[in-house]
Length: 386
Ligand code: 3MF
Ligand code: MG
Ligand code: MG
Ligand code: MG
Image 1 (cartoon, helix red, strand yellow):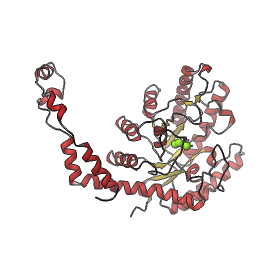
Image 2 (cartoon, rainbow, N blue to C red):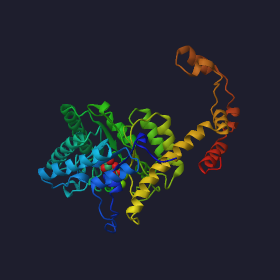
Image 3 (cartoon, rainbow, N blue to C red):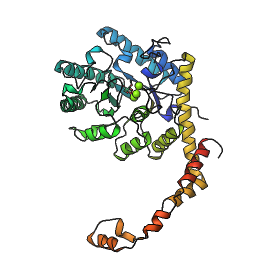
Image 4 (cartoon, rainbow, N blue to C red):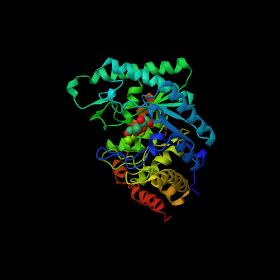
């Protein structure tokens, strides 16, 4: 049990298992792994697909001939091992050209270059069969608000996304776009810092139906927010187009920990929401092995992400079938409002009836909902004693 198969729709990025352990204070601790080798290893682990930034596969300064050879070899590996590329994205953060933003740079030439680079990357993704296109605006932000560009930047961002959505449609790519919010790192403040911000921004785009969100566990946690709450809002809005699963201690630097490593309860409710809501998208792990690890640790990390997901999925099923938990839930949710129809649908008559109803306010305030017991039952189930 808990051994993944492609039916589980697990994906990793080339940049995740390919992470060489660099951090701001030290260089790589691992040798780079080639893309075809990563494809082979992920397939052996039961993964469904592999996602990429343009430059995870093709170096930014590759010639056209080099690009074609690299892509050909990668496609060969995908077909040899039966792996898909469900999602593609652009690296708009690594190159110094983007040091003060890509779509939100104050330099119009950089904004134009960002559009050009993204169209080429969308071409690559489409060639590899990607259906989802992610925008993580890692450099879209500021340290110096004296730049005076806060309002301009949102307009530039919107113009770029509108342009690229039209490009996708005109090419017949049919991408669904997913904005990935993050509050900070590498910028002091990144624009559209949370899932809620991104959802608000999407409503201002020319083709909002083409855009959703790609929430990341670590990113909402860095903002001090609850990941399950964020994805619940995205699901409710019909906007959960993709998801970045990992883990993170609150209030720290971006850690990208193995899924469930730090906050198994948050991971449990994340899995439960995905499974209960009928989410059909990819379960993507945007995380990497600890810098301490060698290659064996990389695959232990990847296996661990997937095993934890599958274990929590099984726990979610047990939770649903646990009679005591279900009884506690039923007791928690009081069904009889005692006012008939009056509170469920507005009409002048219903409003009048509701206004006339006598509530026992003291009794409402006195009732204990049983949440301590419900939470303890959940903990005991997660800790394996139920
Ligand atoms: C950074 C991230 C990014 C995005 C990626 C798009 C490098 O914190 O999360 O990973 O996920 O650019 O998928
Ligand atoms: Mg991240
Ligand atoms: Mg990261
Ligand atoms: Mg991410």
